[in-house]
Image (cartoon, rainbow, N blue to C red; front, top):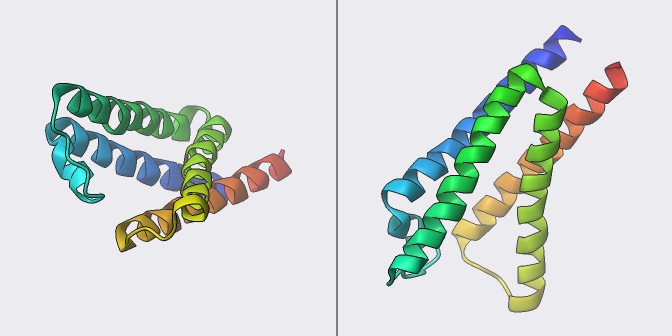
Length: 130
């Protein structure tokens, strides 16, 4: 049981740090983040929106996951699963609607799917222990 809590904390901190990494990159250079998907941010509003979503949202969720790892692991796992799962659903719908994206997107689809499955697995294990 103690091992499960340690694994959960490590997982949540690592995912939180990954989200913080994206947030910092988006705050510093939003165009570099969007270059991966060949989107040009050619106006202030586009850069603002990119910083808000990729920067601000990832900052908030990353911090919550790190704090949640120690204070409320179940809730943090739920957020991680919902956030990752939301990306998976959106990407799969886009593949069905628009066709196959580039390798960068497939890499993220794999990461987000893995993140979601691990979060759901750990969440189920935590609920089973109680």
